[in-house]
Image (cartoon, rainbow, N blue to C red):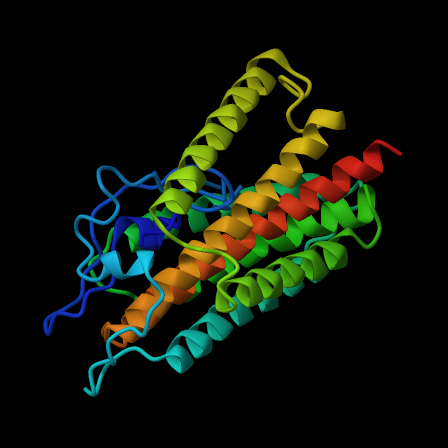
Length: 303
């Protein structure tokens, strides 16, 4: 099962003895990166795979049934859930630390907001480039992934500070709590099999994500050339609606990511691919955080 995540959608864990490269597919826009990118549009965008999402995955047919899966290969050097947890914690840790530093060292008062926001946008562009580079590499580069997290953290720190200090006090903490709640809820629902990650689920999520990204791109173009809020998809009642849709899509992509990680562990993907799993999960969480932050800002502007 592929996920919309730029990393997971482009490649798929394999159980071959050789390097388990990921299968080919692009990413799209949003907060994540890709022929992506959750806002992210990675910092924005989500990957849109082409062709049959199961055709190249050596174990993807298992996703339609939840019987007892085959035993994972008893071999060394294989990815475990602990590997994924540790790498994800490391990646998110770097992101949080740099976000905190950006919040502290890049003030957003009237005298400094232009400089701080400029640095934040520059960091977002660098993070996007690094995200593209990593998503098209055949092997994970821990240094590249952690560098991406550092620049993404700078961007999130500046944007969060702007929203928290100039639009809605406490917005950043509310967005963090909202992201954590979505992650926990999707994890519980996935483990309990309340969410069936199958072909139909995958197709629905990818179609919805593509429509969402296209609408946001059109809105951005209208805003850039026509001024204001474009078509109004990011303000007022429509903004609230699309903010909720963005959070729901992020939750769906989390379920796809969990499936990808579970399959990789079950079928013995190489240990280094735990870094790719961490990278992909980070992109999804950034997408959800940015949607929450935007939604909170819209709600406070409407008061």
